[in-house]
Image 1 (cartoon, rainbow, N blue to C red):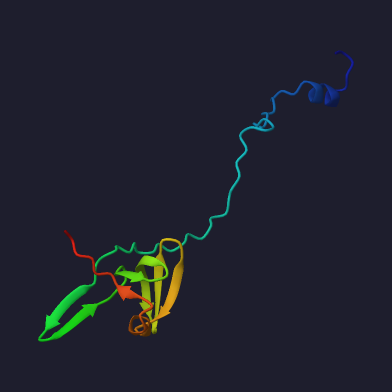
Image 2: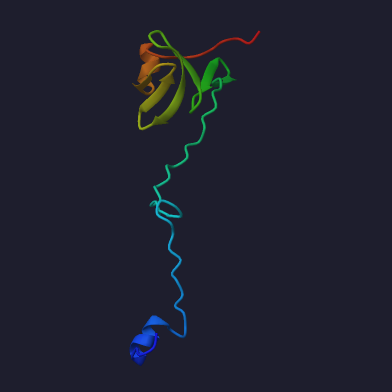
Length: 118
């Protein structure tokens, strides 16, 4: 290329080669950032158990709590999931019901499950 002005000659044949930018191929090597979702609080696992029974003289005491096995004439066997503020949530096999505590036991809506182990 003779006869070219020096500006054109330098632009056509640069002394220092430019580095090519490493661009990812389309459809490959793309990264996406997904915002972190709030993690749900872990609930303590409730272990089913029989009611604790104590005797003092002629009086029989039964201590109830979360995980105590109960029975209802309408829904069958269930587990107490929560007791607070005069309310009790019981989880049966197909449904979860709320009862007033301790009135539900007095009215016969629900009873403590008392199976004897053989």
